[in-house]
Image (cartoon, rainbow, N blue to C red; front, side, top):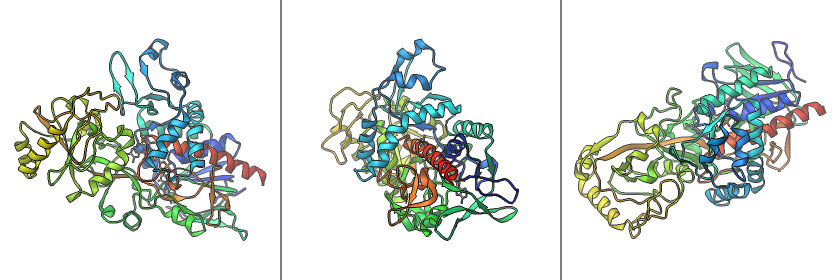
Amino acid sequence: MGSTRSGNRYDVIVVGAGNAALTAALSAGQAGSRVLVLEKAPKSLRGGNSRFSGGLFRFAYESIEDIKPLRPDVAPGDWERVEADTYTPDRYMGDLVRTSRGQSSSELLQVLTQQSHPTMVWMTGLGIEWDWTPLWSVHSDESLQFSPGTVLEVKDKGVGLIAYLFRAVEGAGIDVSYQAKVTGLLQDSQGRVGGVRVRTPDGLDEVPADAVVLASGGFEANAEMRARYLGRGWDQVKVRGTRYNTGETLRMALDIGAKPVGHWQGCHATPIDGDAPAVGDLRLTDRTNRLSYPYSIMVNALGRRFVDEGEDLGGLTYAKTGRAILDQPGAIAYQIFDRKTVHLLEERYSTGTPIVANSIEELARKLSLPPDELVHTVGQYNAAVQPGTFDPSSKDGKTAVGVEPPKSNWALTIDTPPYTVYPVACGITFTYGGIQIDTESRVIDTEDNPISGLFATGEITGDFFYHNYPGGSGLMRGAVFGRIAGANASAMSQAK
Ligand SMILES: Cc1cc2nc3c(=O)[nH]c(=O)nc-3n(C[C@H](O)[C@H](O)[C@H](O)COP(=O)(O)OP(=O)(O)OC[C@H]3O[C@@H](n4cnc5c(N)ncnc54)[C@H](O)[C@@H]3O)c2cc1C
């Protein structure tokens, strides 16, 4: 058992104070351990990317009956309005495998998908309250239609998530130190991790403990590491979330032999407001996102389309669409809607200022795009739109074909003014490369052995996501493996 300068003694240290860290701390606390959470940010900025998030959790359920225990606040009669296709662990797995092109660890994905629902029930027991998500769903007085797997988000989104988790942390008597940046891992002569080095406003300290859980995020807020790993153009990209995820604990883990795994040149990046700040702002949280593009056509600064906007459900394409925008001239793009679709825009678009025009030529002038090219692009696309029934609530197979790129769903002509346009840039959310954990959340070394005393969860871990990602899986991954990491770190402490 370790001790700190203040004299308190701890069994388990958790590094970070986002969703992954706090679920790990709560799990270790429930297992009877004395836990210390070390958070680099000051208290006012605590909570990492999790606090910026939309609070959406993707989880598996056989039927609506599985969702009911998570929403005790919903009146029995109101469940009749809920339409959510069954989303089994196998279907969740299928989405993860498809988006990651089959490259992820199937053992880790099995745990993520199978433990998603039990972990949602556990979090509800911790005091988390849930709401229906508006994301990729269509709500009316008659029905609430959800995209499979994405039904619930935390009440008040990421801000609510962190508030609920801290309420539980305080209720459990778990200590939290702020402005406590972990700068090193302590190892004994056997290589066991037995605490951390930490820098606080009071100076440098060493805090021993029986086990350490790393839950300190990825390297998305570190321009040097972005350039080094993600490549050209990424150093200048906008950061959607916290400024504190700068990857130093990831490097520390690698330095003591943790195995680097996953897609080190890959990251989650989405279309965001072209005027969004360079780093996440807690007054805006996730509201700079611009995800209604499946109902638009997107053009670049040359006036040309560059992606299939309707390739799949929005929740299965948005995380790779930021990269597609970054690859365009000037790293900018324009989402064009007309009167037929503008009512479908997510509420978050209200944080931006659209450019509106009554003809495509006027639009081109206002956007400083080559008018002939834009008129040609829209005309060619409109001519390629096939007959069919437009249905924004599911993949409708209404296509534009014979045009490059095609549009596989939701292809309506762009011909009914006024035309409403939102300029978008690429915003990085989190990085995919990380350290190897096993299904017990133990950190694995380059010789495939567990590093004794070291556990990890959340963004710092790799081998979950490659190329792309199904929306709502980041928070779920952090909580599933946070719960496991906390329990196992506690068990290791008690076994000593
Ligand atoms: C705008 C936005 C919206 C999102 N929306 C969703 C969503 O709706 N659903 C979803 O599933 N995912 C979403 N994500 C992704 C999701 O937020 C992340 O995958 C998830 O929050 C990561 O959790 P984490 O606990 O691993 O990291 P974080 O929540 O980022 O926590 C990392 C913590 O580590 C701390 N830290 C870093 N370095 C140190 C150090 N050296 N010492 C001590 N502490 C340190 C940080 O201060 C921070 O508290 C979103 C992300 C963003 C940015």
